[in-house]
Structure formats: C-alpha cells, structure tokens
Length: 259
Length: 259
DNA sequence: CTCCGGTCTGCTTGTTCCTGCAAGATAGCG
DNA sequence: CGCTATCTTGCAGGAACAAGCAGACCGGAG
Image 1 (cartoon, protein in one colour):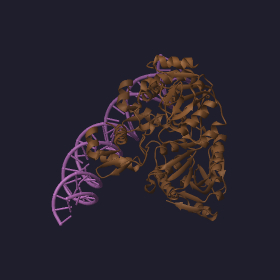
Image 2 (cartoon, chains in turn red, brown, purple, blue; image 1 turned 135 degrees about the vertical axis):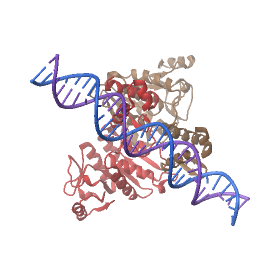
Image 3 (cartoon, each protein chain N blue to C red; image 1 turned 90 degrees about the horizontal axis):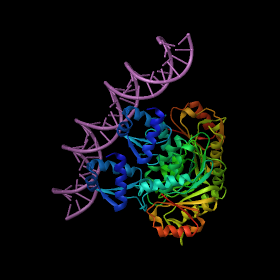
Image 4 (cartoon, helix red, strand yellow; image 1 turned 180 degrees about the vertical axis):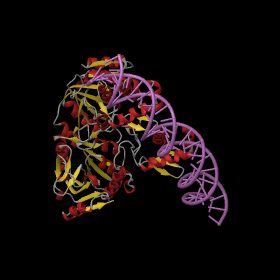
C-alpha cells in the first residue's frame, strides 16, 4: 500500500469518525503502528489533522492547550516571551495579534491569565490569524474580532484588500507583531508582502506596538518590510539576544524586555 | 477511554447539568476520581469551566455548548445531504457557506471531491464560519475568503457590521445556507439575529441560493428570520421529509432534492 | 543484468506520558 | 477544636512514543 493511498484512506477514516486511534488505523490498513505514527506526524505537520496521544482528531476538534506538535522550534523561549508579552496587556484593552507561532503562544498565554477569567469579555482580541481566532473563540473571556480576507495556507493569515478594509474601521490599544526579522536599521519584516501590508496597517491603528521575537530574529533582514524600528515601542525577546544588538534597539528609543 | 473522549463527555455532562461532582463523573465515566480532578484542573486552566470543591460548574453565562464539543446529531443524514449539495457546485465557481454543522459537512464533502483535487484553486469558498475556514485553509484546491467580524463562541460564525461590510464587496455563484428552521410561509431562520443578518446578506450576493436542512428543520419556525422561502432556489433534505411539506415547497417554486 | 543509492517500512529499545492507588495535607462544617 | 470529605502529591505499572537500525523496494546508471 503506497503512502498516497494510505494518507487518503487515513483522512477519509478520520473525517468519517472524527477521531482515529493509531492501533485501529494500523489494523485496518494492514501496516505497523510505527508507520501510522509517522503518517500522523507528517499529516499534522501539514495541518491536515491534529495529533493526540494514541491517535489523531480532525482539525478543529482538539482541546489540548499545549498543542505538542505545532510549536516545534524554540518552544520554551517562545512561551516565556509570550508570557511577558501577555503581561503588557491590561484587562479591558483591545489587543491586535498578527499571525505566527510566537503570537499564537501569546494568545495561549492570554487565555490562561487568571485576572481575565471572569464573566463578561475581559479582553478584545483583533487578529488576522485563523488559528488564533479558532483557539480563542470558545473562551467567554474574549471578544474575538477577525479581519476578513483571503487565507494564506502557509501561515493561516488573512490578507488582501478585504483585510485592509476591516482594519481601517477599528483601532486597538496594543498591537503584537510576530516577525521573521527585526533590525534597527531595516525595521521589522515578514516573509510575504501581503502579510507585511496587513501587519503594517495594524501597527498604524495601535496606540502601542510590541514586537515579540526570539533572539534568532534580531539583526536579521527579510523580504517584506512591515515598519521601521522607530515605530515599535517595546521589543520582547529572550536572554540569548546579543547585548550590542539590544543596546542598539534601546538607543533607538525602544523599551527592550528580555526573559 | 481517551482523554479527548473524556473531556468531551465531561463538558457535555457539565453543560447539561450546570454542575458536576468529581465522584459522579468518575463513576459515570468509569475512571478514578484522581483523573477527574486532573481533568477538571486542566479544563479550568483553559477557562472551559470553573473549579469548585468537590466538583465543577459551567463557566460564566455561556450555557450553550460550542459547536466543536457537540456530538453531531443526525450525522449520516447530514453527510448525505452535504454530498448532494457539493454536487450542485461546479468547478471554478465561488461558493458561499454559512456556519453550522450541516454546512461544515458540505465543506468536507467539497474537500474530498475528486474533480477539484488538482493544482490551481478550483473553487473559491467564501464563508463567515471560522471552523470551515480552518479546515479548508490548508487545501491548495481552495481559495478561502473569510468575512471579518466578531466571532460567536457557540456557532463559530463571524457576525456584525464588519462582516456585512466585507460581504458588500463580493458576490458568489452559490450560497449554501445552514438553517435551524425552514418553512414555506415563514422562510429560513437562525437562532441569532446577527447570524441571520449576515446570512441574509450572503443570499443577496448570490446567483443561486441552496438551503441544506435535514427533515427535522422543515416546517419549523425560529427566532431570527433570514429570508423568505421564495428567495431560495434549491432545498436539499433527507428522505424522511414529510411529502406534504415537500410539495408545499415545490409549489412555492423551489427545486427539492431528497437524499 | 547487476549494482548502487535513496527511500520507505517494520522492529527494537529506551524514554516519556498517563492513570490509578494510597498516604499525607487541607479546607469546610458543626 | 475536632471531624470528615476533599484535595495534593508521590509512586508504580502500563501504554504510547521517538530514535536508531536493518531489510525491502524502486529507479537509474553502467
């Protein structure tokens, strides 16, 4: 049985049942459990399903907060950074989140903040990231506002003129940018120019701009520029950041938080 | 019993009863009290419930269970209906999907359609349903356009003036409506007036309007009216539909497909 | 035809994670 | 203050997992 055929069969079974165990799948397809595990992992990497212990579930039916297979690289740095970013947001504020793994961690960190736990919406979250909206939508303490637009498969971000139009109608207290590169001279940047455009617009609608970037992003350049370093108020990064780079940012007027 | 299944069962019991004791839950699910306590703690951390001594209570005012925790009722009817609806859509068209369990099945049926499988976007899907967008976003054969707006936790739908604004800028070939009630005299209806407003707007922007509703919805009335029956071109339902009701719809000029 | 490199699968082993049990700590209640 | 139900914590057994290795398969080059 080829891998193509196996993947197709797995996805069909999964859609049909909502959940599929590794052992069951192995038995039904006549292959070993190890192969099924590899298949599940690879399909999860493509976001075709969500891995759980013992099996897999269709996308959108996962409950686990620490989604184990999604946050692969530098997970602990990202979580520490995310917690620090979450602490910069006060109850009742409107916070804008762009897409990316770091901002997804910020969303999770906001979700477990105790002082936001009570009844009426304690925080308004504006985002163009589909995955963030999906995770937060069930939680009563958040009012979730999504920009419209066309979904980019790679990053789960909504982009395009429709997104721009919605952002033109709202403002936020804090914008949290996830970036792929941040440099004093070249500013913040993303992989894709459409994402950069949406992110730039979100910055312009925000009273405060926070960049969340682990130290590997600092001093780097990337294709699509979002905004100048001077536009950013606060940079949150990890302690592995090069001290010279940090000082450069501070001399440019940014507040730098290292965790 | 897996943790997924346990959490799902716990949340369903909790919403049903408003309060759940550790001991009761342990007995009903056939696991130890210690496990239930750990589950409660983890769910409480995610703000899905509030922990009390001896048990747990539902969180805040949100008594309606979100879509993704609901056990799908009439699943097989919905899947058959969904497949029939998917067959009404031609390759290359733009199709609008509202929220709900039935339209989610329509999205899945579209995703497994063989003639759409190849390379460049074979279908544009416009939706205000977060869960549908999440599931389809990774599939290269779809271009996914999401309306913006505020997310309703219960149905995963985006509503409000931002959604209306985006819908005003696009048109679709087919609109597929998921409804909670559909009657010849009273038209199609939803639970929530904001959802109804978005759905109505989507209808107005569509060349053809399809209602997907299992037979239990027919002849019913619900709070928020979406549109008149005459606005709808095609009704897809299951064979358990009352023949008189079906004839009424046909006399009103609708094409009725039963599967 | 044979050889070779690459890829994939299945097996094995050590590790991690989950659950149930039990003992000690704690909070509510009279 | 003491009693009791409940909770927390540590531990052990078992299930699931990750990684490494060996064999099978495939396609291309000689």
